[in-house]
Image 1 (cartoon, rainbow over the protein chains, first blue to last red):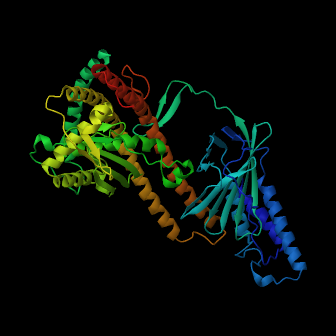
Image 2: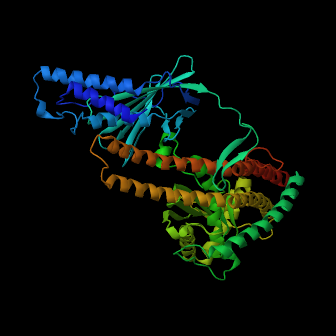
Length: 238
Length: 373
């Protein structure tokens, strides 16, 4: 995605509409009670490669977000709301719903979801979604409450919402990310819906990435990690 | 029936010889390790005061609730290996102190041991080791029930050959045990040995030997009377007991082999684990206190926040990868040790039980008495 081109288009849209936004509230990802274990749990195990043709186009999503913001501004304007109560500005401004924050949100969503390959290891009690050039999403499934992990740099909760696997990450600076993994009926397609929320933009930004299952070719050797020798490969096929 | 005994006796002699070489190697190098506590040694002692020590494989301290393992930083497979590894290190230190007779690592508790050490791993990683140690003698007297904790410093890594980053902890246990032993009189030490022998005999044939001992309300065993000198029954019991020790020594040697094969990988695991933990804490401290790269909500600020979390996760997942590497290297050895066959079937633990049953049957055949259930 050409970010400069994207920025230019966004600026143009914003200049035309002269959006005035006020009193915005953050629309966080829909709250669903996550389960540690679910009998309807899907099996995501295997290798996945991104299908760009079926995945969301970031420009379309950005246009849609701008339209939503414009409509919201118009509604507020018609309702005679006080524009000075927060986040009211035009192009070049700072604060909530400014061009830098909207573009920032879209670029974040693009960056977070740009892994072309996924490798999923799933067992009865654990899933590990290895993402190319990113950290792996991991979740452990046990009866009862969904596991929550808190560290000084962020918090994470994951679990099942029926057949969907959900990862929620809450970060400082008003940033939160939600990944919802859904398996297609045939088991050959995987949709990862990533919603990024910033407390500086009124609407969340969601990108759907579609992946196709593939079987990695037999390389003729198999490798395993060791502590003293690092990665050790043998010519024995997997 | 005699074939396996003869075979094990021969095998044990060979294995004990290599065990001696192994112990010598440890003794020679332990002085080089980073340690603030010096090991108290016993000096010259009479044979009567040299209690034999049974050191049971430790309780790995893995909570039954598997959902807590990640949160507690417990890697179950590594803990199971540590439960076999740590007693071997402690045995070397106890032997170095020169205060004890034979120190054996046991696959399961042997109540008639003159001194029995049991332990539970409360915490074990590259930074800290915490052990719950219990020591009890054959009379049932509790010597020790204490938590030992040690922390590593930078100088403990890389671990020098034959050394251990937690040598202080092991030495403290050995010193405490020696101090407690010094509080006992020669007669008390002799009593412990006698009770040990008679408890073993009673486990083989309660109807003959139970009357030699009495047990107080507090659970303490005392000698009521002693068998006559040259009692043939006692001679048989001693022979059976020695056969059992031969088996234990063979098992014990396997734990020593496991130690030798595991130690390079395990030391690396602890070193990497310590570096990871310190780096991660330092990293998290730095990122939470640094100034934002851009205005709140801008890409620069969001990216900085996300990257801080991303790298923290990558460090955490590196540790998982290291644990996997450890398991890939050590698991086959652990399995080999647990699955060794000596003309008997099953795991090491079940072999031990089976071996004791065979010994009881031998005793039954020789004496015509019914052994204890």
